[in-house]
Length: 241
Image (cartoon, rainbow, N blue to C red; front, side):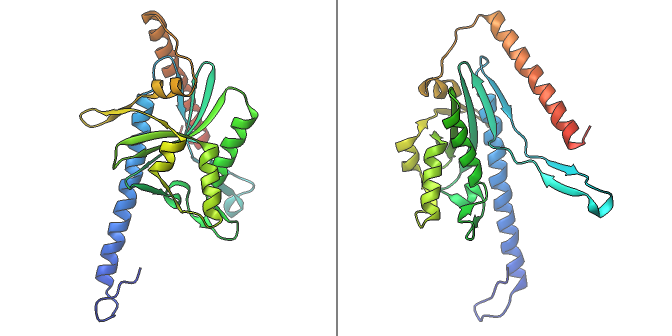
């Protein structure tokens, strides 16, 4: 970034300062996203199973040295959530503005391909929902300024994004989520937030099961055990173990 002062002379000091501010804002937005994911997972009821899919770098060595090929694992969504009889594919987004820009949600826009970087994720989610009975694909968007969160069908978000690629609005206003999505109630603790994930599933048609204390304890233990196994497998895949 080249910043110029009032006399139109280059001012590298101001340019560097603005670059630092932009990087700090990007880091803060990323931290808010991670916090939202953590709080959402902590809000999942014990009679459901939830797993965070990880986008991790993987190496494929087609040869030695510079001949090796590196690529990244890019998942269809952020979370897989299951409570009988419904499987949910969830993409989580959080924004601090009244309207969520599509580039902040789905990456850069490619004018040649006429699509956003992660638009194919929405396409794959919508395709999976159409192909499989008992599967719901949702984009969960939290508007931090108003404190409102919505679970919007991926197919509706995809339609909006495709219209934007054809010259439509380049952001998703909260009104769109109110019209097409399911509200997800939330409450603030001292620092963190809790979201009514159980209420969201019930509103979307998922069943709620009454469980005894012993069944709940067993379910929590199974969830934790599965998470440990999956994290171990992810670590082995990443080469960290």
